[in-house]
Image: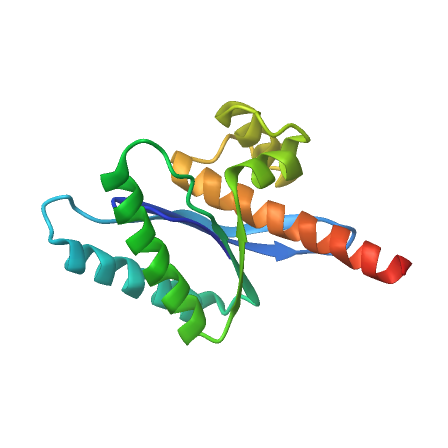
Length: 163
């Protein structure tokens, strides 16, 4: 499962590894909350949405995008709170969580750490054999995080086996 944290929109995806190094998107989308709701209600909605997805799909692992701190402290704080709820839901489900920075995701998918959003989305489309770029952007970002995790696991496994 891949997750792109956010308070208004949390992107998620469920990927399934197939034979022959193929990966398929089982489900992807967003958990949305209203800015008219209180912070605690929004966090509760994210938590419940994730718990529902975890119960439905029973993923083996969760990959979450690490917070990229920008100049907007208020946004960074609310995304941090959403990340906390996401990590809690994964922990409650007994799942290991891997975390990746936007730079790591871009490197894993495009080989270039300064790739723009469109380049990453094009690679997500190609790697998952989708007809169109997944929308909204938050769902595409969750797919990218999950693909990064799969790629990183394969690389680490090869390194481990080479020793």
